[in-house]
Length: 126
Image (cartoon, rainbow, N blue to C red; front, side, top):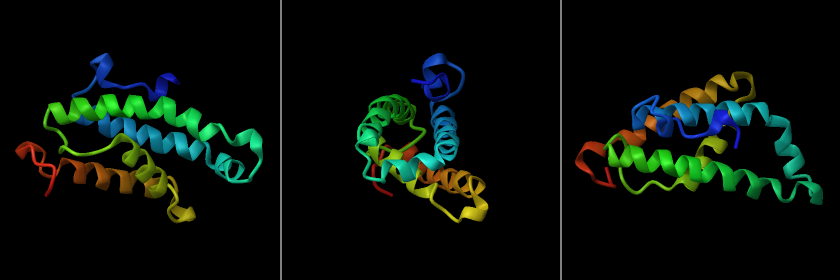
C-alpha cells in the first residue's frame, strides 16, 4: 500500500477523527490522480478486471482501522462501514468537472462532518 494511503493514526500523528478526515481527503487526491483509470476499468478489457479488487483489498482495511479508532474515540458515530465510505467518496469525486477536485474535497468535508453527528452519544442513528 502506498505510504500516502496508510492509516495516519497508527503512526500517532493525529487524533483518530482528524486522521480519518485526512485519510479521506488523501483518498480524494488518489482518485483525482487516477481519473483516466476509471474509463479503463469500465472498458470491458480483461486486463483491468482485477484492479478494483486489488485497490479495495488495500484501501478497505486501512480505512477500517481509522474508522474503528475514530468510533472508539467517539469522534464519529457507530454503524459506518468502510466499504460504504470508499464508495461514497468515489461517487462524490464524480462531481462537476469544472470544479474537480475542489468540489470533491468540499463534499468529503461535509461527509466527515455528517459522520461526527451523534458521535458523542454513541448512537448509530441521528
